[in-house]
Image (cartoon, rainbow, N blue to C red; front, side, top):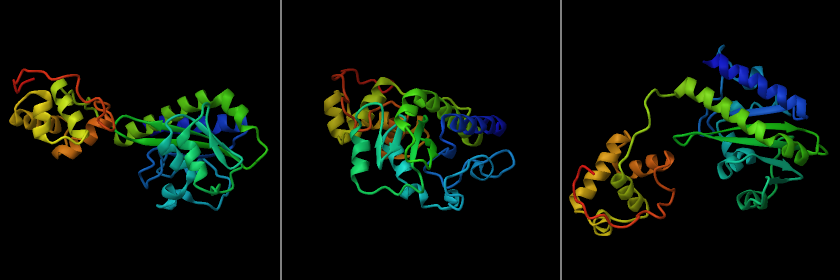
Length: 255
């Protein structure tokens, strides 16, 4: 229920104020132009969350997520990270964050320091919560060391609760067979159906059967969509690396 998401939004605000990061911005799905809203239909950004610049109505700007470095960094790092002194950092060296910092001056939108907690959900949804201050002298590295884990859990709970309320499904994820996964992994690695048939030691029609059957189970159309959906559900790696564990000789289409 949206009331549950609202309670979590209030907790996000409370803990931010407690640790010295009183300004909050949140996206339940950074690919969506629709901001998270409360039971009254109004965006949390208008009712509960407040930003450094009160005139920046970022949730009404459909191109904001493409420009904002905090959101851009959330696409590259699934762990909590922080911003201070014009650069992004985390609990360990992170080349992706370093690369974003190196791209050039970051438009801070008035932020002096911030902690960002991305929230990656099944199915490929990425959300994020940003806790910020306009105080550039704020010791955000210390706050991060003490509170990052707690903030990350809270962000995950908020994004998952909101997404389940507005777009959740009561259907369990599809169950793919070992052979269907194997064929999709090789397909993700760029192999043709004929090449997969030779690599896995099954017939060409059987390869096509497995790929088609996997697409049907995943409720998508075609090979490319089946690969993408299987990747977001964790059945195959994003590049299809390590696709096969070795050829299996059985050619039964029911495998």
